[in-house]
Image (cartoon, rainbow, N blue to C red):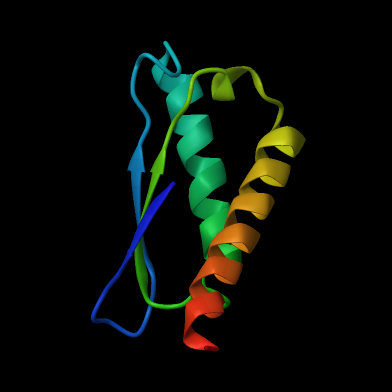
Length: 88
């Protein structure tokens, strides 16, 4: 996941899931749907960022619960790093 501040008042999401990550379009679309849904649930807690989620090898083999759990930890880590420097 890559993130950079934006000048808007809300976060934006970009996805980069290539054929190297998931061979079939069905698998790539399943991953993208899961990421979008997770982002939709957490965007109210995130600060104004442009976020790009990059697919890594092995993500296509994860179950829905595993994918959701890893996304939860990514959003939490991103939220902590976003809030950290502003509190100093």
